[in-house]
Image 1: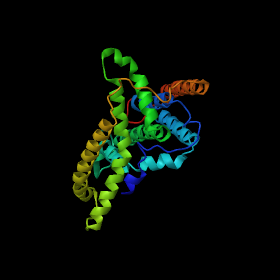
Image 2 (image 1 turned 180 degrees about the vertical axis):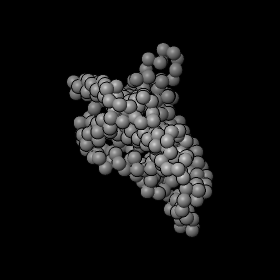
Image 3 (image 1 turned 90 degrees about the vertical axis):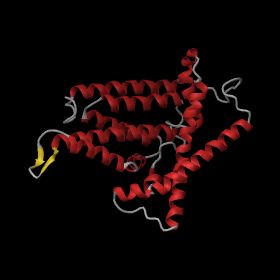
Length: 274
């Protein structure tokens, strides 16, 4: 239950900070850069530099390092699974004769990939925490606007993405409510990983039913308000880049270049690439 409470992905945190005031397209570009660096690079020093930059961004957004660590720890079981999958299936020199299936290279690779997941989750969490769902939808629609020439429903695609993101905290809250109701009926969510997996079934079934019910209610509400897609719709706030956004974009490009140079100059991650 604490894991669900600590997960901040999809939650907008109201604050007055330089990061919050940036154009949402700039923040999406920054999150995309973090994602690209986390996937493409294979260097411990580069990952350390990206981690420091994310902590600095969290501080500039007045969220603090605690936000980053809480967000990462909320997915500790996923990180443990990623670490063990690579740690136990790696090749190389075993750490001890009686543990031949655990190798130093495997442990290094597992730690590296767990770090990669943590960076991607942190970048996405910072984006959603500093950008309202409405701004995210507007930014995504503007970025996808060139695809309208291919007759793709750009507005509808952006609306779907924003609604899905907006309902993440709602469904987490619903899951917590169901867990408390099940505990009131004597259910236990303690024990090992297998026991917790079995106890998840009484949560998933009513959670899916609640999700479908909310989707049906949302569709009826949109229809009652005469929502017909992008036809004839206007924007209450038009997105425009200013000098502050241009400076942030230049900083993002500079950061990308510096991290790539660091990954090339300094040694790569042990057990991963060169």
